[in-house]
Each structure stands twice: as C-alpha cells, then as structure tokens.
Image 1 (cartoon, rainbow, N blue to C red):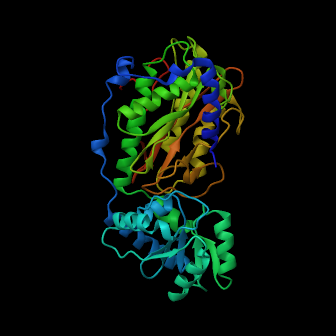
Image 2: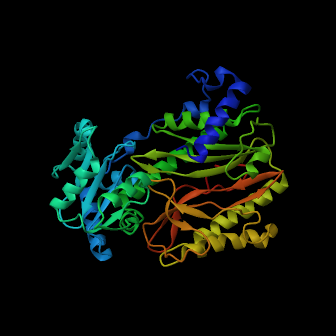
Image 3: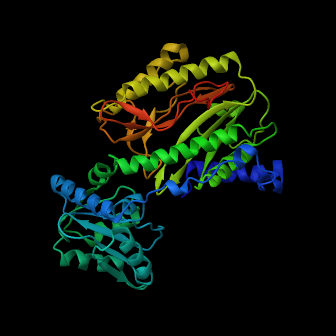
Length: 427
C-alpha cells in the first residue's frame, strides 16, 4: 500500500515531467551545485547492530512476555522482525513468521523456496544462535505447518501475541487454525522493547539526523528561482546520496502550499520571497530521521519572521517540558500554549496536528505526543518535536527535530533552526 507521501510523490512526478522535461532529474558532477558537490560520505561512521544486541533484545522480550502472561509472540514481515532477528523480509501473500516463545528459542515458518534466504538472514542476524526453520511448499497449507510446530512446543492452545502491523489475512487465518489459543496484541512486548532506545540506537539516529540536516543545508544553499517541488526533493536525495545514505525530503512545499501540512498535488515553482518547507529523512542501519526545515528564497517578510519566532518558541517550550516522568500530552500542551497565546487560536485552529510521534526503526512509532496521552516519558525514548502554524492562502511554518529523553530532560539530535534569515546558522 502506498503511503500518503509516496502517493503525493508519484502524482507529483507526472506533473514535474510536464513542467520541467526529462533533464530535470539529471545531475552530473560538473553541473552539481558546489554546496552538494562538497558533501562527503559518512557511511564509515556506521556501527551495525550486532547479533549479541539482538539476542539481548530477545531476552528482554521473554521477560516482558512473562509479565504480560504471554506464551509467545508472532512476528510477520516488518521492523519488529528486523529488530529482534535481523531479518529484513519483503511482505507478500505468502506466510512468513518468526515465533518467539517466552521459554526457548525462536523458530521460523517460511515458503520452502525461501529457506536458503531465510537461513542466511537469520544466521547473520543472530550469529551462532540455532536456526529452526519450518517450510511449506507452494501447494501446501502454511498454517498446518505452523500449528504442528506450535503443538510440538505445547503452544497451540497458549496465549499468543500478534504484532500490530500483521496483515488481517494472516491474523484471521491464525485464529481459525488455532481455535484453542487465546490471542492479544504483542505491542506491550514490541513497544516495551523498542520504545526505549539503547545508546547504540541513539547514536545511529543521531547520525541519521545529522545527515539529513546537512543535506537540507546544502539544498537550501542551492535553491534558485524556477525550481519545482520535485526538483528540490531530487536535490535533497542527491545530497543524501553524497553523504552515503538513501533519503530525501519527500515533502517539499512551496509558497501558499506550505499551509497544507502534508502537501498538495498542485505543481508549483519557486519564486523570490517564497517559503520552502522541506520534510523527510533518511535511514541509517534501519534507524530513521524525520526533520523539517522551513526556509525562504531571499528576504523573509516581517510576518514570516514573527510566525517563525513563535514556532521556534513553541519547539523550545516542548523541549524544556519533556523529560522522565512527564506525560506525553503535557509536552504537546506546552507547545500548543505558546501558539495559542501568540494569537493563533486555541486547540487545533492553526497548529493543526499533534506535536510529535515516536521514531526509531519506523518513521512513526510509539509514543505519540498528543493531547490526552498520559503515558509517561522515560530516558531513551525518541520522538519528533514538530510544532507548526499554518495560514491557508498565505504559508505555513513547521520546525521538526528528533528528540531523545535523557536522565534529566530532553535533547534534540540536531541544531535548532534559529531564524528564517539564516536557518542553518552556527550558534
């Protein structure tokens, strides 16, 4: 299924072709902006997640399963499967699962023709740990294979947790194949492990954020009149590539379209004095960045500067409020109060979305900084911090940085944007 951003991107590409022609996407070293050309790879800084770390994650999951009275959790394709096992599996209609019991080692179910690939990834992900793989042929019933494997471990009538992103066709078929089992969400286990980031995970996320920040700065200094949103996005992708990673600002909003927090399908070109809002990130060893910078080509108006300052103060208020033991909703309220007191209306009048979302191996994950969420922040939790003000028919301004909860408060993983006149100034 296409995400909202992917849909906007694909629709925009067709429009871009009409506006700019085939040469819009060609960049050679000789024609490349000097600001992008001078970027160099930081890939050598990446320290991959080790098998030892994944085995420790599995042990933590077992501890949480015991406290939640779960006998096992079932993981289909996705980031939780990768987190615990190192297996990066493309999803399809064919059942592929990892089963992690509360006692004993994980085992896997996959199509027989995929066994070699599965064993390769499992052994690389968990090192010397035993690899127990149950396979099914194309004309076989994969659920029978799974039921037999569960029965052998006395789990077929147990309490099983299903990972929250599992496709309905899988979860529904599992319930039918295992009528004596009890099912519930595995989120207390997956989120319970993944929401608290280790120092290694935070280091990977910090690198991802620094890479995206550098890519945005190089793009900002390369802007020129006449560019389309798609061309600017392509520049951010090229800048990420020069830095050694895959990433981009997959939302680039120009002028009045920046008042749409998640974009418009209408093609637009950049002119002097226009706001440009860039939102996106990259992936470093499976960990994401998600950063927004709002800039202006040329000289901002006094109104732009004033609203930028309000958004900056809202971000600072959220940062000052966040910390261990603070409710997620209270961090949202701190930012929203600044914007409301500046005259932009209460509730969601002009600050139209929540303050932030958890981020890690998924761009959006637990927890969510939103009104009413009384979940308490803990050291190691990572979220976005992204207040904004959106004025239909004029422009929008959003500042987004990734934030980590520390033992004493909170910290942004990138330098804050200080002004519209020099949004990447070193202070």
